Image 1: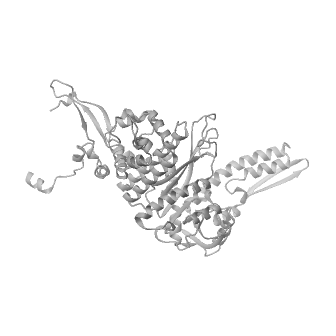
Image 2: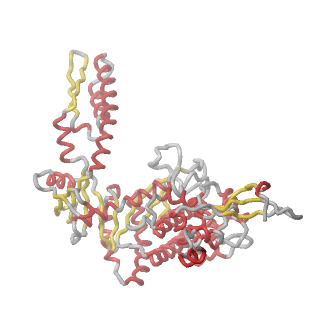
Image 3: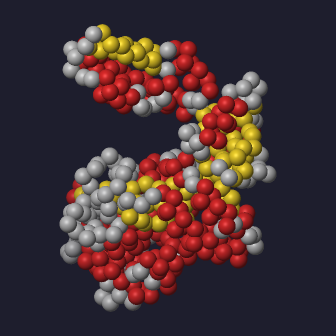
Length: 534
């Protein structure tokens, strides 16, 4: 018996989000796989092993992103445990010591072991893997030596920061990142994928032992930034098929778009692509013979139209300034032509904006107009269309398009890994290559755990929505009094759960951390009990 008038809440403990990720990690034996692959970090004295530290950081990135100094507070405020060690032992210093003790080859072996466990436990399909790259800003000073942090083409448009690159191979189902590669920020995309081929081959060799299928039945999907004839040959030599979006400036793309513009070439598809139109042909792409599919996308067309409208307004402002300077005689013809070309260089503006430069004595005149007929022709024949190239000649047109659209999975992972998303990579304040590499390893593991939790729960919500729903499953700490001598007791009160949360409690076995949760999952009493009560 307690006196509720003298009770008060003194805090809460996390259960749902940390418990769900801990359950997934247990299914994959994350800690064991990492420690077996990285023996130098497995026998850490008076502190966590490399597997425990990596899992702790992965959970932190997914549940409460912050600095390494905040990790003990997160683990201490959670009922589920990633380690038997006290939370205070998970310090930033321990993280950096463990990062310095592991090699690139050991981390590659660890991610291969975890990927194999994920495919086997959650029945992931790896026939088609999507690949893409991005980079993240670091705050490393220019004078600090680093192989990974380099100045390159930053996705954030921050030219004042050094960046670290990340390439990910994700499964077609579940958006699960299986392999990743951390690379210098000034490397090319093609070089990154080439460096991943060995690890990719090792993964498929390991998976082949279980399902008995050769590597030649696997396909790698990429976007247009990865086109390279040599890379296509390298993939074929390794036994992989290829699906890629060709750059529209490629000669084969121009011929495919010209073919698709002919009457009757675009066919309406059915099934999952009902209403989508596509044209298919066989064409030479350099020295290679490839099946090309031209596919229309209404969403892409709407986005390109918005981009053209914005770019056109900016170009018109620039052209008005140039016209005023030409009329005042403050610019010569060569400079004027160069500035006009720069103003119309974006979003296909040069295809339908007609410019005329005339000389009037010693001065120039600049006039322009938007040719609506040319603009409509551009929209009809080029905008809203992609050209997909593949050597999967036996696949149907629908299968080729669906496989390519799976590449969006990796882009979605990158959106999650950006600031403000699920398991964000940054902001990161690591100063050494070893720490950057382990930090990236843990971040990708956090993305994997979230994707697998969403897959296991079969949640229709976004990853962010699912994690917010799980985070709401927490125990309230209630300090009360019994009216007797001694310390006032503190009890854990379970929350009221929604139907999806009750399903999560059962799926991730959260009641083992707080047995009182089991009572919240019962919606009604058995009929026999109701009859006896009556």
